[in-house]
Amino acid sequence: MLPAGVRQRQLHPRTLLVGMQLALTDRRPAHLTEVHAALTSLPRAGQERLGVTADSRGRPHRLTYRQVEHTHRVINRALAKDQPDGAPSPRLQHVCDQLTEASIPGAFKDASTSMAADWTDVEAWARPVPHEAAGTGTDPEACWGHRNVGRSIQEGEMFFGCYLSAAVMVADDNGEPVPELARRITVASPGHDPAAELAGVLTAMPASGITLGDIIADSGYAHRVPDTWANPLRDAGADLVQDLHPHDRGPRGTHHGAIIANGNLYCPATPAPLLQLVALPPAATTAEVAAHDQKTAELARYKPGVHAAQDTDGYRRHACPAAGKIRCPLRPASMLLSRDRPEILTPPAIHRPAAPS
Image 1 (cartoon, one colour):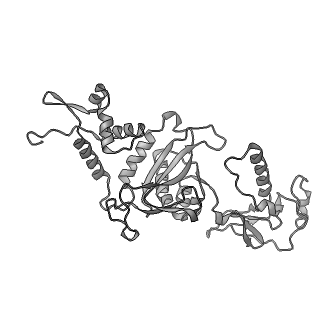
Image 2 (image 1 turned 90 degrees about the vertical axis):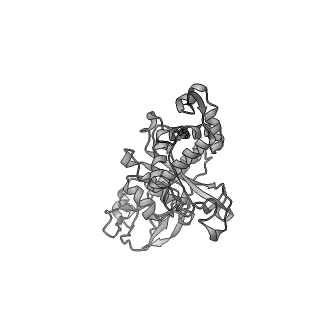
Image 3 (image 1 turned 180 degrees about the vertical axis):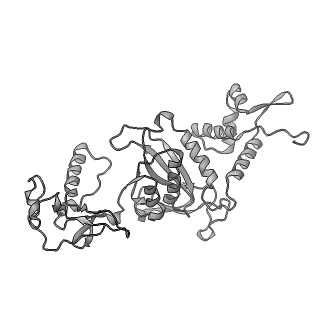
C-alpha cells in the first residue's frame, strides 16, 4: 500500500524499452530525456495503450521525467552486479540476448547457422581518468583500451570506454543470402578479453535451440587464448573460419623437413610462389578470385594428408602428399597417377618421418 497522496509509478519497464527504441529509430541518442520526449510525442491512443498517459483521480496524467528516471534506476539495480567489474551480469546478458533474438524475424531464425564476429570501441560519456586510477571516476566500469581506427596497430590510439562485440548473421557456405542482422551483442570494458566475452554468449545459444555453424572472424581472434575462445566454440559445435594472424602468414620454418606455412605443413618441394599466396583484397574481381582459387587448390595438393586421429597428447600422424595427391620419384607408386597431378622434378634429399600436427 502506498502512503496517502502518493501517485503510483506508471512507467512499466517494457514501455521504457519501447521509448529507447523510438529514440534510436529517430537516430537520437537514447538519453532518458530523449526517451521521455519520444514517448510523450506519440499519438494519444499510443500513449494510453503504453501507459504514458494514465488516469489520476479522474484526470489524465502524463508521464514525467522523474518517472522515467525512477524506472531506469530500478532496472539498473535489478540487473547490475553487486560488485561491478566491467562485464555484464548473467541476468543482464540474458535479457540482452532475448531482446536481440526477438529482433530476428521468424522467417530468418533458421535461415542460417553462420555468423560473423567482430568488436569495436565505444567511448564512455564519463571523463577519462588516469591509467593507474582505473575503476574509479563517474564510470568505474569503463577502462582504457586500444583501437586501430582503420590503421595498423602501430598507428592506433587509446580510448576510455568499453568494447562492444557483435555476432551478425551471414549466409551459410553455398547457402541463400540472408539479412545481416545482429544476433548477439555484448559490452565489456577493455579490462576483459572481448573474444572471451563473446564466446560465453555464443556458447549459450545451443541451449536455446540455436545451432552454431561457421563463426567468421578476422585475425584479431587468431591469437586469443584457446581455452577462452576456440575450444569452447568448437565444443559447442561451431566451426571457426578466421584470418591468420600476420605473424603466422607465409613460410615459418620447417618441422622434420616439412615446411610450416600459413599454419599448415607442406611438402619441402612445394613451389615457393604458392607458399607466398596472400588473401585477396575486398575489391578483387571475379577473374582474380578464380585465379586465386586455382592457386590455392594447387597448393592444397602439397599438403600432407591426415593419416590417423589425434592421440591422447593431441598429436596426429600425417601422410606424405605423394600418397595420392602428387607425383614424386621418392614414391614410385605415385608416378602411376595421372599427369594432371603436380610432379616433383627435383625431390628433396631428406627422410620422410611422420610429422605431428
